[in-house]
Length: 289
Image (cartoon, rainbow, N blue to C red; front, side, top):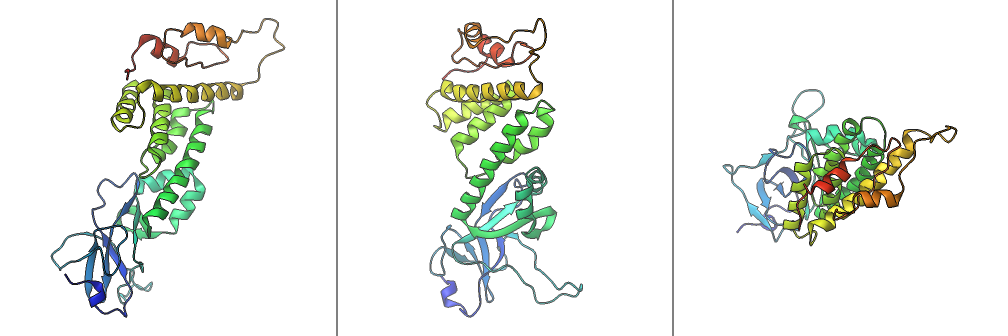
């Protein structure tokens, strides 16, 4: 097999494309192994930690791959085709157009991605190692979790304001799968989508993230309790000046109300309306492990 080490070593590697394709990446940030050129030879990386001696396969003109556009002169006349330089072990980070649009909800991250190279269809890309990609997505995931919590705790339009942030963390790859399952569960619980919640639980059990469904339900329930209590505090000040204030139920009263459930989802609202979660757990609509 011919390798780049046999080719002209005076040339740097440049990235001209990647394995896979754009389809399915519109809503996410994905890592792809690169297609690189050195001199007049084009190679596809078949391992993450590729080197000139290992992990590159020579392509011919008939081989298909997702191509990255050349950069040309700014005066409109083509100059010599130019691509980003890539170093051994690096790959292509591809940000989809819907993903980029949602990142406007997290301005620091939108600013960072806006400096990446442009790709057709409003995609953006940059090059980097897989380890750096994981660190990047993990940091983005943590920030999205914090922002989603803030929006869920808001008394105003939880679904409309929270959905784009949820979709960011929901579609990220190579992040903490267990934490991602919990966040998905919290979101579908908050929007009362029990069908999707049940799918999250089933997927988490199938993937070995939790030993039983009750373990995931318990984590989600505690998080929802915290969200609802915080939302209640932010909704309006308590009316201590009222002569006959509407009583807030105690923890003991709420515990007795859902004592026949696998986990006590104790949510407190100022108007003391029955919560969706209490009804769900009493009815047993959620699957068991």
